[in-house]
Image (tube, one colour):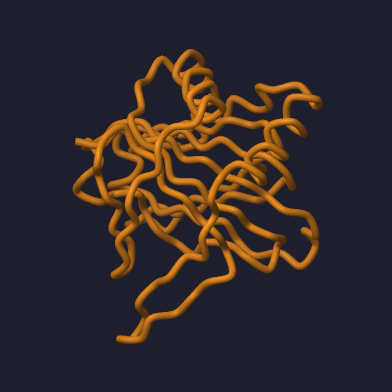
Amino acid sequence: MNLLLCDGEAINYGVIFSAAEQLEYQTKLEQEIPWAHEEVVMFGKRITLSRKMAWVADREQSYLYSGSEKLPLPWTPLLCALKHRCEAISGEVFNSCLLNFYHDGSEGMGWHADDEPAIVRDSAIASLSFGAARKFSFKHRISKESISTILESGSLLVMKGATQRCWKHALPKSKKVLGPRINLTFRLRC
């Protein structure tokens, strides 16, 4: 079912992995990924965020985010398996993945759209979550209407069509969330 009432699609497939798989994959991702603290440029100053990230892509495609360039890491067997699972369920194809590691609810992501020019216009973005359940919100750019859903551990959310052009999304901070969350966003880049 599409969560959005107009201007795009956001389909929450719910939990697609067993509890044992969720724990195994979260543990492996925590240990195997060379996580790095994210750096952004705000008001002309370089700031290091507490959230960690990693960037994986099929070919030498850097990822530009808020004045910082990330070079791609190679696909691991686990990331390939997770990508294939998302592709099989969604019917979409992906060639890159942005990974975020949130230590607890004090870390989040403000309103934004995944609309950088390197992403194929209106292509799907698959968001796969492991760890603490978190609220995920959408806000329409014009009407300001907002919609929220809960992304549980092992859940898959797929956004496509006009979603990135017409909506912004956010991962709100929460003092109630005490555990870590790993999020993988599979993308199709030009």
